[in-house]
Length: 171
Image 1 (cartoon, rainbow, N blue to C red):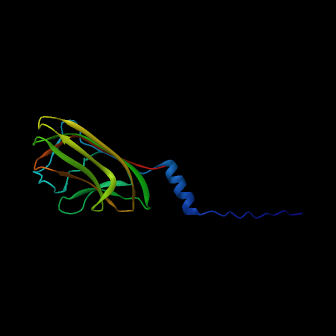
Image 2 (cartoon, rainbow, N blue to C red):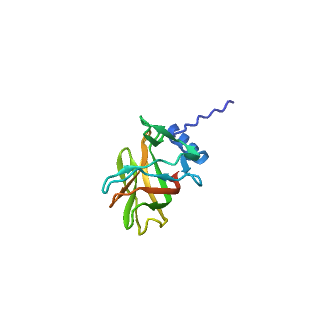
Image 3 (cartoon, one colour):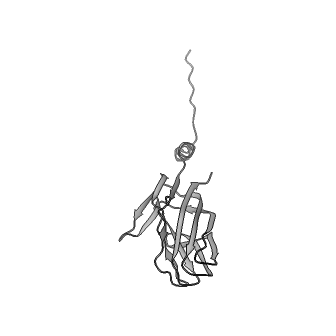
């Protein structure tokens, strides 16, 4: 007597592969400006959004890289193969060359402000060093660019000190 059985497995191979990938290696990006490597913007004009230098000391980059979009225009690029939702945390100590300045920091994705990932800060005196941080969530498509912009209510330069960016895949 011969016994035989057939088992039909009904699953989506892409879903299983994605679940394994996320459990082993979630997408993430961490970069920072090291101690003593501050970044000062060029002279900002009031009300003009200006891209700032992305911190280039990379501590971790899984599915992300800093790329030159052309002519020295650097951005963080999501290089994963599928859309993903991420949490982002940006922080910095800052000082300005102008007294009583209010400025805003924004995260852009593909040249557009990401809603909810922004922070305002007022510096009363040019000698003040303040801190700021923002946390938010966004969805990135493969090859999306992530950039940081600043805008102020007065003409000034702004110095970013100990700046960091952390992007982690949302579970």
